[in-house]
Length: 181
Image 1 (cartoon, rainbow, N blue to C red):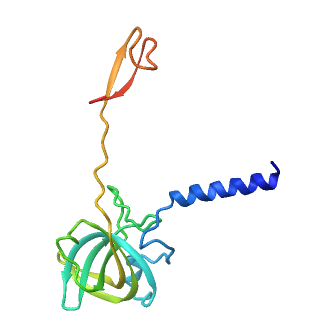
Image 2: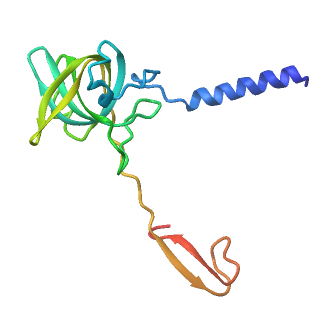
């Protein structure tokens, strides 16, 4: 096989593998790196952004539904990075035309918006007056709930002799998962 053919087939197989592994969502794409905290200044009005996080409150109104959201950094596919101890990137209000049911769009659900920054508004958080950047959302994506990640308990063994499991050939120590085999 010539070098050209080898390069062609290698490129074709690599492209097929990469395209099969990529996750495309309605909120995929590249957007400017403007955070809600940066938008509190009002200097970014009119910019198209992608913001997401956890819903704090959903308020249906006459022609639109407004969401108060605790912003979080986003993965490349647009999903909020909701890890324990992650720093949030500021709160924001996103309003989208139509009705979004508060029972589905309930607090602590992950959501991502694409829209235009239209200004700011002030709301109280406790006794603190907080400046929320406002987003006119044209895309609202509610992420499916992920099942909790399994925590594997480990149990220590210490022994001598030969074992019944592959790799157990002599004295030593180690770990094995606790629970059903």
